[in-house]
Image (cartoon, rainbow, N blue to C red; front, side, top):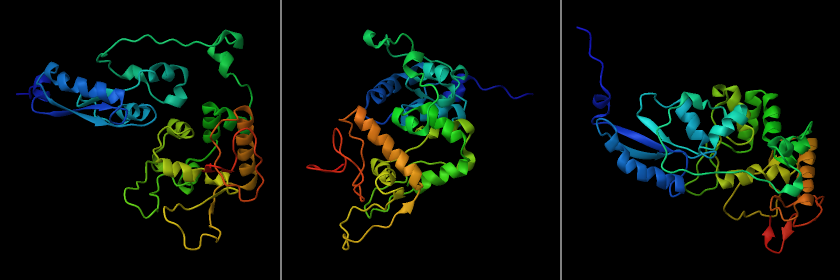
Length: 297
């Protein structure tokens, strides 16, 4: 006799399933998820045990990509994410890399109304009016923090070349700081990248790094393209120069510093400058650029 198909109740009975959330513990999304997890098992045939699993990253996009590409498709993993990703996937499909038509919507815990508005005097009537920058160069990509510009640059790079740059900057590498608790973060091997993942990693989606790693990755801006080693301890030879690893060439370094300076001219209070400037070439304008009364910024 042919084997009888397992019913939904039989599948879930005695199982532990994961109610996942694309944000870290203690936030609002986490709180909603944990409240729902206390009760949702009673409404699933077989009454499985439900546990919460956090998978933060890129405003829950990392978790949604996991559901789409990695998670089992048998109903044993489901979760809560930022619903704003759904219209984003339509407006910016290459950047998002998710097809929400392949997902099943279970329900919502509340109902909200969201609107978008701009100050009328700006003369902006559509989203295109705000974001249509026309043809821009690399410096403008940096100044405008253009995701589209960043991904177009990434698409011209070989995956291994882009991975080598990230690795040289310290992403995916455990910081050698002689302190416990340091973790490498997340940078997957370049051979596993899909084109859409390479594109979105150009502006940070799909990467995971600590604030310490990010601070080190900015050191080439202050060191003529050299990334320098980190330490939490005072060096015995603190007057000696610190050897760095060259990750960008001189012209690229100059273009990036020039872009940062132009941003400061437009936004004097922006706290974005990473220094000291060992050659004294940076000029103070607006806020601070280098040493301040509060220390190095």
